[in-house]
Image (cartoon, rainbow over all chains, first blue to last red; front, side, top):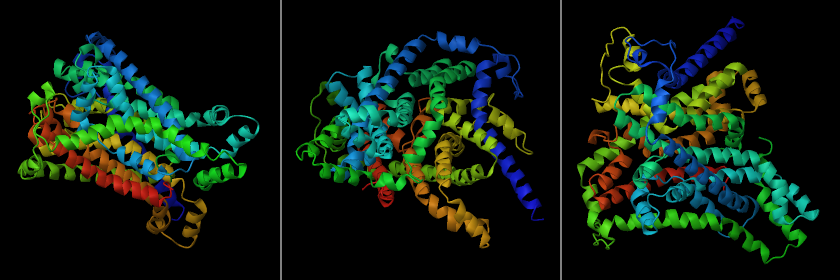
Length: 278
Length: 321
């Protein structure tokens, strides 16, 4: 009996694990299935759970909507701008917090942590007024600046733990060998920080890619709207064209999924070491 | 993690080493301030200033005229807050928001803890499958997730109605999930929980790897059963991660906006208002900017409550020296 119990427990555990994976994966599967199957199969009752004929007609329709390519361009610019700026500014602050003790350090850290909790939705009106004062409404620059500020706190926090994880002796050794502090950081610290930078850039990209409200309120020209806005207008404009909608959803998710898969390991390491220290 | 102690003591050691080497005293205090200056500047201008603006706005009476002419809105004192706080509808929205948060966080954690424990027990291949699925779900943009759930729960051709209809005694043909707000919120909570599970499970799983194997083995040798093992060995190790995940989830759920907005086609009925949607509608659909601002201020104060728990927990962990 003692031998039988672990085996049965293991089987149950595996069955539960497979069930969980199937339930979690189902919405993604159904999105892909709908995006690739002909309209007649989408509206068939009862629905077929397995792929039959495959078609690209929904993708063609989604790509041919007027604002698609300009939305891709806008999202790419906003995503890249937010990531680059957040990493640049965030690394400096993370380095200061991880490597120096200075007056006001704790206040800075606590402020950064609290600010991270502020919802962008709640600050839309005053952010809008500020950007309109400086003429940055309906401009991608205004959107990038706002996203930057909302991603910066967590960027600093995450990078801080990565910087702190690099033994300071390495940089000191480089300085003894004649490097300046900046040189030591560039030659020794930065290469070791690369996994942290990748994990952090993923976070910043996801934030910028996901955001909807600000882009919706701020960007009034059609050729500047981002993919989130495009996806929502797709649903209001095309009613229940679920084939086209799922194709559009697939296209919107694709860049983030690809990036996620590429850096998955580093993200896991980043989580373990950074945001939540186990 | 064996590098943790070294990491924690890194900052003090740096300064000590600097002092020993006799680094110029005048340089040391300036550099860190220069390094944090861009962050401080960006936060102050694009976040601090609007935050102050929001607070100010909530004590004024701004209408469309002032918004477009740029004239200073008249002072309103605490009128906006009085209007909001004496409005029964506000309390209804607040209660709904809290209930929604409670349910979403509760369901997410009730699933995440067993699944994370499960991931430690299954074979490596299945753990890889589970992690892969979770990462794929994690990567789904919010608007994509909401679109997919809208299609799943569609009244005419949605697969959800058909799947549930397979259960004996259930007939959901052409059933509209959003006719009854309770059912509608069940779908919305479904999107939120589905989207939040990857973060919760993977973080807790990472925390579970920190449970020392020898400790667990010793407890089993001493006759501890599974429940005692979890309570006395596992729980103390993962408790910090549990609290952090719960706090972050609670903050995320309180601020939910996108899922409701999309699932209700950009025109949520008043039964579907949570605080975020309510303040947005007050401001941009009804043009009562100041009432909207007052609701936002109250929301921000609520969220700061969650932030305090989070920060205190980090401090207890020694993350904030």
